[in-house]
Length: 299
Ligand SMILES: *[C@@H]1O[C@H](CO)[C@@H](O)[C@H](O)[C@H]1NC(C)=O
Ligand SMILES: *[C@@H]1O[C@H](CO)[C@@H](O)[C@H](O)[C@H]1NC(C)=O
Ligand SMILES: *[C@@H]1O[C@H](CO)[C@@H](O)[C@H](O)[C@H]1NC(C)=O
Image (cartoon, rainbow, N blue to C red; front, top):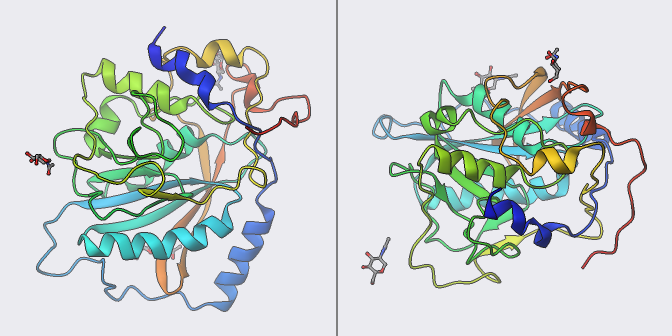
């Protein structure tokens, strides 16, 4: 057992609504129908002849049913990262199936999709906006770089926390076989990933000299009553997901890409990838819990 897993009691706060993403799909459809897709003229983040040797960042956003957050996230990130001269593109990895949300598998898919063309990824929550310009998104040459440190994250303050926003080189993500595919529903997948990094002797670095705190380093656009988290546990999920997974990862994530769309929000380009995750119900029957979601009081 690892310390990080024991600390998880802090994290259970509610249940996530399982509203499917048809609404989003519809709106995206409208977008595609009504908005011009911006042709690939150089926008301010794109490669120019003087900066082509710079490292490229793929921002991987695991996604379902967070359209309002996305509308804020995209312009904010463009503004924030352009100030730092980061070469980046935003990939929204949208889960399109009837299984419970699987953040880790979606990140694995995003990694595979971007691996050829990008040097490093940011595993990025859509509802966490960096506000302090000293949070640097540059190439993490000395090891995985946890932007949303426990000292500054609005909610999670345990030492081994690496959720929220994490930068990692393609090679390092590959080296640890990416993330476990066993985590259907909310929570713990990032703690398991921490153990993978630790086992591979990769030390997680964090921003230094940040003088802002949990209240003003990030904007957390998360409405916890409106956006319920799916904290259900069914079958033997609790037992299995508390342990290091030495089997599954980026090398065996089962999925189909249904479609990809270049979409623009306020004329800023992003790519939406619609992914169907395939659940092996023998291995992880909890990808669908039989009982209806429990309504829990949120702290
Ligand atoms: C943080 O501040 C200390 C003390 O002023 C300085 O030595 C160190 O280089 C700074 N670190 C970074 C990453 O700026
Ligand atoms: C989206 O844009 C990328 C880069 O310009 C291009 O390679 C890709 O084919 C486009 N995809 C679609 C579905 O238009
Ligand atoms: C599903 O998982 C079971 C148990 O882990 C395994 O034996 C089986 O080969 C898997 N099936 C597929 C299609 O991967």
